[in-house]
Length: 297
Image 1 (cartoon, rainbow, N blue to C red):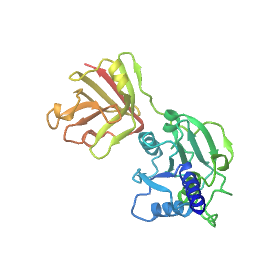
Image 2 (image 1 turned 135 degrees about the horizontal axis):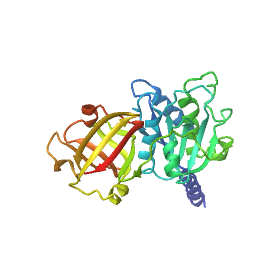
Image 3 (image 1 turned 90 degrees about the vertical axis):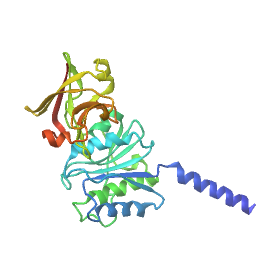
Image 4 (image 1 turned 120 degrees about the vertical axis):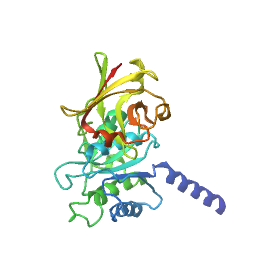
């Protein structure tokens, strides 16, 4: 009987342990030069040492809320339902911007400032619920005098409590309308015989330029490998680049140093210099104010 009770107790413990999501993924613009990221993880581990803690990136350019939004969208769908993301790119820390938890229709959770960082995941994954974090309950003990490190004192702590099942979403705080702060940008659309879109991000390691124009739109437009495309890039109203290049399946289809366009790993239209850095060569950057137009040749 004692062995049976022990086995049942172990089963109940294991069931409880794995009944709640246990994964927290961190993204910041902190870098790894100091102890800020480690402090956040330490707070999370203090809530429950069984939590699994991962990094999305800590190399978001300082204060770049748009890039934070993009990296979340780029990554989140590959993580299991129930994963809790902490995103801290927060130039308004300590101001009246709200601290929230967003639950998407896909079952993922996003914790951080409601400053535009959740624009793209809200759009692509759908909003199920938004809660304002009640700092009277969901704040690291004895941290009320700190106004500039909500990543540690509020977001990591709340995310860990949610992931570990210490609190439910309803216990995060007051429910808000199903909306988040959005950053406006040019969506990919057909304009006559052309496609226009935005350059949301660069492939920073190689200088390739990624757009938000999806493969299906490119295919329906009739673009196939070997055909030429006229690509025009603007920053606001200023034309930065205009040039013709072939559409290729692989970089090796063009000589080294030649421009080409292709579909990137996210199946979006992109362009590059084979074995070169397109962004640096032509002064192209990324963000919601960078626009691109494609015309068939």
